Image (cartoon, rainbow, N blue to C red):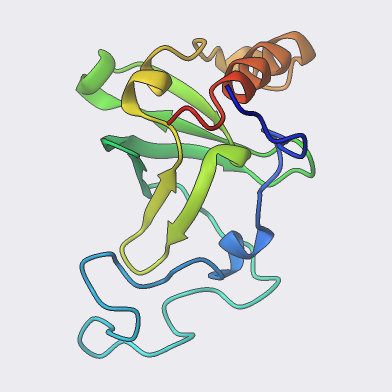
Length: 150
């Protein structure tokens, strides 16, 4: 298993994701193609604009995971709470921001670099423990160990 010495599960790998800096074109469209009537800059927030990712769909490397219920952009403590719906019996999962590979603001999709199985096997999320150090260490350790295995 290869791990990046710089991988921090709780930090955005590229903060530009929150400001529309990741690919804004859907994989189904070419890089310069936009949906009818769309123009650069109008569909994605500008730098410094707070962005609420709630409701965005979450896609793993091998398919849909669910949708974002809650997200935080706290420095070195950022995460997504994802409602998996019926896929894993309505379970919610905690995905550290470091698992995000890109954000598609046009299609409202967050892509993560983990497989559905890795996400399914992740530690459960207890809403009352989201900021508890022990819980964060457990989740952070799990996702650090799965880094590069997806």
